[in-house]
Amino acid sequence: MYLEFKLVEGAQVPARANPTDAGLDLFALENKVLQPGQVTMVDTGVSVKIPKWHVGLLFQRSSFTKYGISLANAVGVIDADYRGTIKVAFRNFADESGYAINKGDKIAQLVVMPIALPHLIQFNGTDAEWVDTARGEGGFGSTGKQ
Image (cartoon, rainbow, N blue to C red; front, side):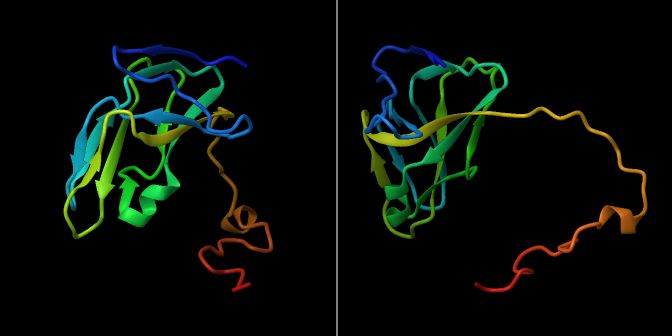
């Protein structure tokens, strides 16, 4: 599989730190300061053509966690028909001063994965037929602590 990309002036080519890394590192196109409690968008200057039947998923760099920085939307979703530049929305959860992102800093990882696009069918059976597994509706913590 190939991933076509386009760069605006000054943007860096997405790259893997290691040949078998799942994610492509994305780099900041601009200097930004992430102020405490605020959401800030940082442009990468990179556009990609996600292949049909695939999705691009944006994840934060794990090192941001130690500074209280997180993606504002947890995981970014890039659909196959989006052609704009990839922008990363950050939230600074720290109570301290702002966190500086400088042009060229690694700021996120792009993972491209295949997807299924199921057709929706409304269920018309009984509640008992719906809950037809041993787990049923058991959610958070229902299987016990391991």
